[in-house]
Length: 235
Image 1 (cartoon, rainbow, N blue to C red):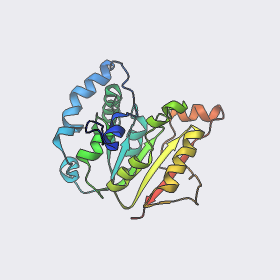
Image 2 (image 1 turned 90 degrees about the vertical axis):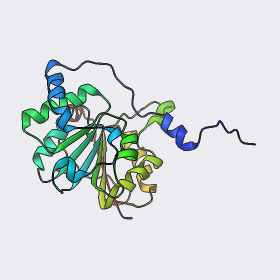
Image 3 (image 1 turned 180 degrees about the vertical axis):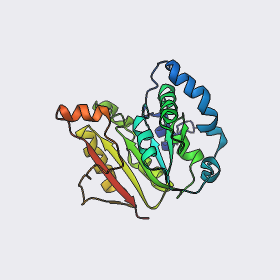
């Protein structure tokens, strides 16, 4: 007889987080930007499904970035593509403050932001078949084998992402950990409803829209590789 108190597989997966909340205070500039701009640029889980036209004041292609860190590359990307709208999701408040500060400095208005768990944002706030691109750059590789279960890129999560993309939409992953890159490729190659934009089992060249971060430049100088995966939703 099964134990009625045993959690389902879905609940077990939700209980394993792919991130650890770091402590840290915002700088005065980040705090000021957060206070000034969160009311107009911040999005809340409690508000439910997003109406993109209402949130951005127009109809435009929508890109979702999960885990934007301190937000510099997202601001640069949005500034370079004013014809697109961007939604950023980040759990660390100082990163959100830094993003809002960068938006203010660069005069960028086509980003809206969640400070919450991306799994819940996807489930509660993003309509199916509504995104043109989802990007996840340099997620925590959880390089110790005992922590691999915490990696964000897993088969069940990839299918959750696929449900949110339009047909023809792209899931763009990037990492500077070779073993994680191999893991990502294994997951994506086996994922239903996706096609590799490069050849089968091949990584893609970095597309021009993805900025090279300071961290990435430093890694390149030290001889570290970076691997991009671009997979298109086919069904």
